[in-house]
Length: 283
Length: 283
Image: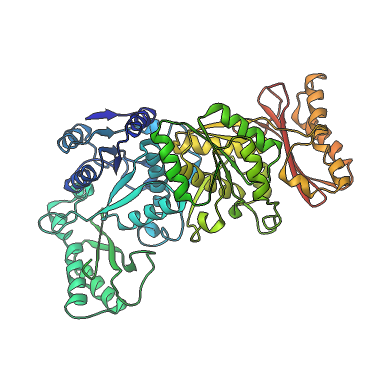
């Protein structure tokens, strides 16, 4: 596995691959790999000749009071894990290599970024789409794999690729969960043992809502949201940021549950912000 | 020469070229070709194995009261002219092919777009950068040629490419002028014979300013601007939109002329908006 730190070197590597007719799959990450990341890498390896994993904690997608500084980082451990997954290149640029000057250019997706995480994190998605645009241009992949835990992000990136005509297939990878149901996240490391237990509220809320829909035939969104909010509200030390049921395509809020309905939630467990989501019907 | 109308077909064509190791140069245009466009095509042909000329009157870069509807169009004539320049592909998509849905994604360059044409045409440059981003992703060129008449546009696109890491060399082509000095523009067709004569004011203003700088050693920007404004103001039926002297790199207004100083102007001659620019020193 090569570790490449300079964008220009990364592009040269990709150009050589493309000249040989090899397909490249990119898995963009912020590192501190967990099993979710490793599954992205496995999926990428199944689908393309060469796998590039980018590892970059992107400052411009963090708000001023967010956890950019303390976001967990461990390049050595990450490199070893990526190596075990037969990744071809770990692209791990320094901040100065990605933003040598203060950037003047932004890629902005409107509408889809207004609600859910976008409402609580102004500028977050512009930071995401801008860095992903950069990564797409640097790595020139034929496909890119993103986790479905960042459900809104996946929709936003699909929209960006469609609107701006990147010749890149976007692949969503199902959420990978701990045995007890907690969605894997690099931020889970912030949780104290007590908070770790309470963090299960998200997965339990999904199960509750799915049961209401699938077994009890509830299809009224307002009733479901009420149930979920009451349930989450019963956990001391858990603060709801949002609970929504939206259409998986356009992310519009729905009144009635259908096959496209996704329950999406963000909560704070102590100081740690966690998100989770799931289709309400089987999907 | 192929005429391709669908973005996906254009990308397939480019992918085949790239697989053969051929370099592609793109000249993005809005059509109604004049000698300026033809020089872009010649330059592109000198520098790359294959030349793609895009022809698309991009609605999202026109303001609501601008000339999108009446912008001159003549695909047949343009195709014949491009053929004579040994263009490989004329990429001429319909509006519906470029914007099948109302786009939600914008590429925005800040700061550089605030002044000059950007001040008078809000949203114009976002329309330009967004469509150029699309063209870059559809055509996948290794280089792209733009005319220096759209001086601010060229700076903005260079900035966008640098900030978002497109692996594309941006080449500026010097302004091509009519024998009497009028910068070639598809919009010159709007001019009545009387206006056509008055439109020379722009080139004459450039000559005036260059003479002041080069022969008389004037280097105070305010004095030069005063001279140019007075000169342009002496033409009845010519309205000044802006006259500025800016640094060619960052487009910042200057106080003192130096080797990077560009005189940039926009005027209305009757209802027709014309722009022109030049370095004040030899360049």
